[in-house]
Length: 334
Ligand SMILES: NC(=O)c1ccc[n+]([C@@H]2O[C@H](COP(=O)([O-])OP(=O)(O)OC[C@H]3O[C@@H](n4cnc5c(N)ncnc54)[C@H](OP(=O)(O)O)[C@@H]3O)[C@@H](O)[C@H]2O)c1
Image 1 (cartoon, rainbow, N blue to C red):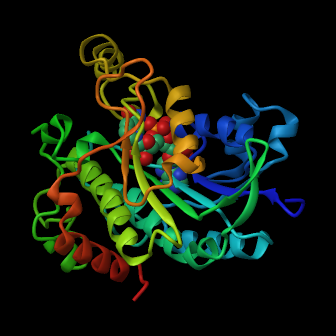
Image 2: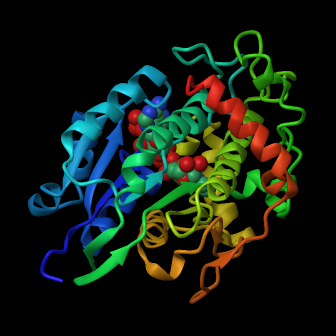
């Protein structure tokens, strides 16, 4: 027990919302944290506003713009050089949502940008750090106790990407669906902007990218046994007042939290969402493979996390295998 050290957790997107609010519980549980953001300076300034100087000493900031695959490669090399101990837990949290775009924004590699940030950037990051994280099983101190911690990856999914739930069936602009994947098959470069190769729908592009996040969890869990690593997704609840909605009309930003608080009762505070993410990424009771953890769409006091049923669009083994293999090609892993 005397050889136990702090565990190392990596999280993307800590400048606001869920990611920012995950830092505090991660540090409280005893993690040393790698915070991956587009700007170290901005991320450190924001973290400083809610964390003490001694907490800040346990955060290491690494600059990666997830939209740029070259940046992901450089950032991962920096991580692998800089940290002596392997990473124990990775949390893929960063995302961009731009439902009002008339035409697609393009990543430096020319891909539709929400797919590039939310899926491709994280997919490449996970794959480049996979050997490192797989080698991390050892005793670490969490919540003051020395425990053997199995490597873990947690990806933020969402209700609107899961056709098995009511929120996943919302037809505006369309439910998440990768169709025949012809957009990916044909290289996903201009004029292609959607995984299914059809007309650009910015809100659906976000949902599709989150669907890809959730598929990644299922496919990785098939490829790497639960004896070696635990890979999960999580829907923390509707955190209706984060910056994720910064590109929606002001009237939506005003009404959406009210609607979620009082009508659907799906609203979750940023603080609670951060606590949930940190717990799923840390606690032994959540170390079950390929689970999509949820607390349901109507928040009830004292309700425990459960394994949310997933749609065929996420678990179908043919779709998930194809999505995984096509993504490997698109991000340059093959
Ligand atoms: N809010 C919800 O109701 C809800 C519900 C279900 C799931 N989620 C998921 O929860 C996660 C966090 O969302 P949130 O609501 O907390 O959103 P948020 O407040 O907008 O936070 C998103 C984070 O991602 C970062 N990011 C964006 N583009 C990036 C890039 N190119 N490279 C690196 N980092 C980038 C942002 O950094 P910058 O400051 O640099 O932009 C920010 O730190 C997302 O995966 C989202 O899909 C949210």
